[in-house]
Length: 251
Ligand code: PGA
Image 1 (spheres, helix red, strand yellow):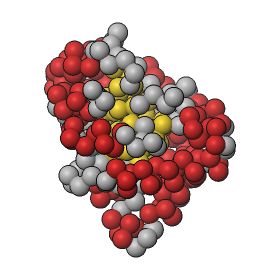
Image 2 (cartoon, protein in one colour):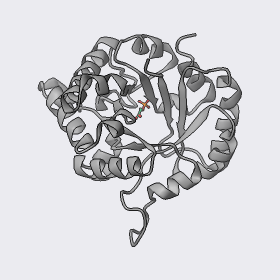
Image 3 (tube, protein in one colour):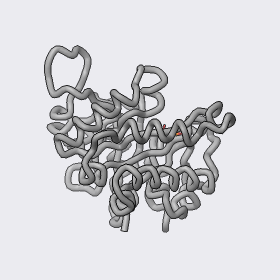
């Protein structure tokens, strides 16, 4: 009942021509995939070109971040109307790298989430604990603050169209994936938080992606878990072949 959602987060990679080559290579590899939502998140500079390249295909466009105001004196920022204009349907918000290096907080995440939903786009809200949190038994406390902070004040309808990405920081870019059981445990905890915030029915509609060293080799075992509804893929999304294999996790 929840359509799987596989997103490629390209991070700070790919010029326009590289982005177009990657997407051009990806298109035919995933053209037959119907029961999965496929998303790529290029850097801002490549959004327009990738948007043209994927027009008419089953690949959708996401941005990696956004600012919460629509326009004004905010040098260097990009707004939701601008992302909508370029063809984005999704925006990744609160990625751990933004929290760690760029001062993103639960409050700024929540403002961005509201701005994105206010313009009819879908937020992919990232949450996740650091290794120290896990080792000191703080995983649930950290996840709870990220989830409840990120979704504060959302209506049931808005929440239902949001996506949560659980990305344990110790698994990002390290090659150290969470085991399917570790992922499931946190995903089930997140779904419980969503149910407590609204209702079990709303919580049952929300897709929760896993992210952190997802590769073709581990994607199907992760996706087989009952509360894992997708993947947010960094490194392995930079090659068309490996990303396509993850998209086809069930084939
Ligand atoms: P990774 O990144 O797949 O390279 O670990 C995931 C992410 O940060 O979204």
